[in-house]
Structures are given as structure tokens and as C-alpha cells.
Image 1 (tube, rainbow, N blue to C red):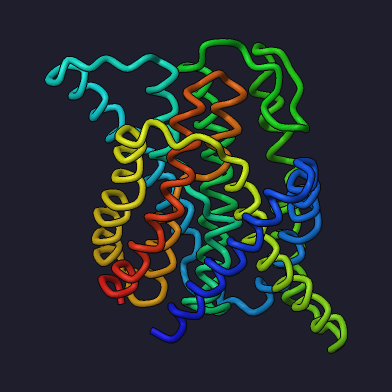
Image 2: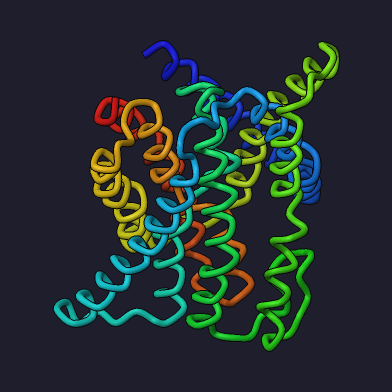
Length: 319
């Protein structure tokens, strides 16, 4: 309970600081802060925390579970859309369908998942969260997520991320490039190599300082980005995505983990990652491929609130 209260103090406190700063500072600041975390903060955190994690378990199961969660979320969302249009005679536009499916698939397992796992479970099991995010969510979002967004979008994208500028016929190669230049993946490999190297105390202390500072900064950045969200429409549709993403999927797959011998802290880490609210990548894809931006925005904002309610349940149910 103490760890949970401390986490809530950090989430709400740092998020509120970010929200206030986001209202006061120029709009370019969150973008620059995000670039710093992307290129420096998060990679350094991965190297620092990976040195302290236990890799003796079968951590490669984590990305497999991530893929299962992504695919199951998409399938359930498509089924709900079909049933809604058939029985309730409420037909959604393709762009709305795309945003609903994306919000039910991909979670914020990096900027939000990392600090939550580290606070509640500790560094020993951080590798499970790391493998889930880097080899599961990242590849799922910029692989399957991009393909799905292109299918449901109303137009051809001009870009996918700041580093991907292409026409639609070269999307696949550009997405692959974005994944390969992702510094988090490179730092993941570097962290594995440095596990075998004895570093001087000042280097370890420096890595730890940057790592924990990056974690705090990521929570502030989330608050800054939330402050820039101006729409709370589509609450009913957003609640459908969040019910699938944050309740149904982690409950069903979390129960299945027991049959694969994953229990205790390991199960907690995986379930927490599955239960994260929709990632900001869903909004990026919605804007890039002309999906329903209002639905994506509402799912992001509402999901951050729902997380505060669901966290105690997951910790209790999978203790």
C-alpha cells in the first residue's frame, strides 16, 4: 500500500507539474523534451536498469504476450464494431473504426509503463517490462498499427514519424527504418553487453541519476502533452476501447499466464503493461493517417484517469 501511495503521489504530482508547465510554456518545449527523452533519457534508463535486472527467467515470453494482447485487442474491437453496426444499427465511419481499434491495441508501456513497474515491482523484474515494450509494443505499433491505420485512414500519409517521410508506396521500408534507428533498441543491446562489464562507482551513480531523472521527466512530459489535449468528445466510443484495452485484455490474458507458469511479480509486470492506457502513438497515427482524432484524444485523456482506478485491482488480483 505504501508503494502504491508513493506512486500515486509521483503520478499525480509530476503529471500536474507537467500539465501546468504545458499550459504556460511554448508548444515547442514538449516536443524538444520528448526528443531528449527519445534520444538520451530513455536509452540511458534502459542501460542503467538493465544492469540490475534478472535475465535468468524466460523473459522472451513478454513480447509474445504483447503480440497476443495487441492482436486480441484488435479482434475484440472489430467484433464490437460489427455487433454494434448489426444489432444497434449504428454504423461508424472507417476513420472512427480505425481509432477505436488502435486505442484498444497499443498501450503506453514506455513513458508510463516503465515508472509504474519500477515503483511497484522494482528493478529486478524490469527486463520483463522492457522486453514487452521494445520487442512487443514498439514493433506492434509501428508495424501492425501502421498497416491498420493506413487501411482505415481517409488519405495517404505524408509521414509516419519525424524520421519517416515517404509516399504510401514506400511506407514499409520507412517504418522499418524508424524501428532500426530507434535508440531504445540500440541501448537495449548496449545494456546487455555492459552487464558483463564492471563499471566504476561514479559511472554507475551517473547512470542511475540520469535514469531516474528521465523517469521523472517522462511523467512531466505526459502531463504537458495532456495539457495540450483540448477535446473530450466521443466518451462513449472511447470507453469501449478502454474497456477492451485496460480491463478485458489484461484480465483474460493475465489469467492465462498462470497456465504458463508465470505468477507473482512477473505476472504483475506483464499485467501492468497490458493494462496501460492507450499510447500517444495512437494519436500520432490518427493524425498521420486522418483517423478520428477526437476519439484518439479522448481515449488518451480518459485512459490516464482510468489507470488510477484500475491499478490497485491488478496488484491485488495478481499478487
